[in-house]
Amino acid sequence: MRTLEGGRRGIMKSFFIFFSILAVFIISLCPTDSISQEKNVMEAVPKDFSIEYQWIAASMPPPYHYEFMIRVKALGEGEVVYWPDYPGPGTPEWKENFTFTQAQLEQLYQVMESNNLFAEKWQAQERHIVGGSHEFMTATANRKKIQIPAFVIPEQTDRVKKIYDALRVLPPKTIWTKLETRRQEYMKAYKKR
Image (cartoon, rainbow, N blue to C red; front, top):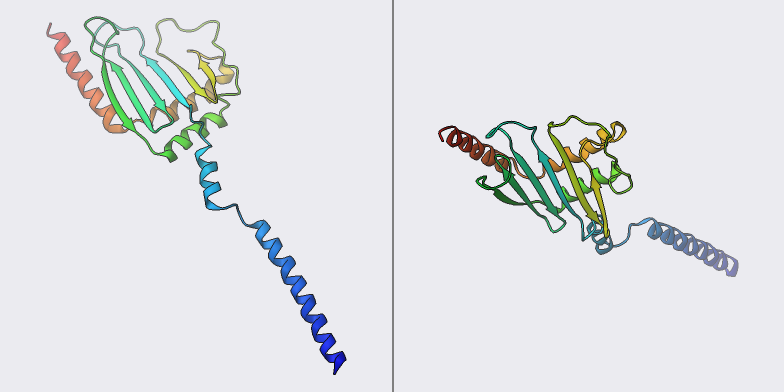
């Protein structure tokens, strides 16, 4: 009787040890708690992340020239500043504010990171087309300020294009439509002067 009872205890003890090891193994595979996961997602974009991007149309006689700037902050706030002609006296400056989601911001930041925005040494070409359309940008993250000059060297063109394409779609289409409508009205009024 003692042997049978001792055997059962041995088997029970083995099962207990086996299941304890299995439980520890399973727990170690589980992700950290959801609060830590949310914190990691929020920290994916630095709190001081900001962008100022500017696009300038080619040299053209008034009123065909135009320029715009997009400003972005990590708080989910953005602004488009639009000039329907060469900036200066007599040219209106239109401002449109917009907001975006954390997911949109993270997607933009991911595009910038994957295209080496903060790791690259951005260089301007020695020669470029004078009077052509051009764009440039300043970005800040983790107290580091990066400037992308207009007309980057050819090896950097594809990466900078991906960054700019991702940035230009952040403001809603309704803003771009509104600004283009106002620009058409400005041109009509200008021609009647």
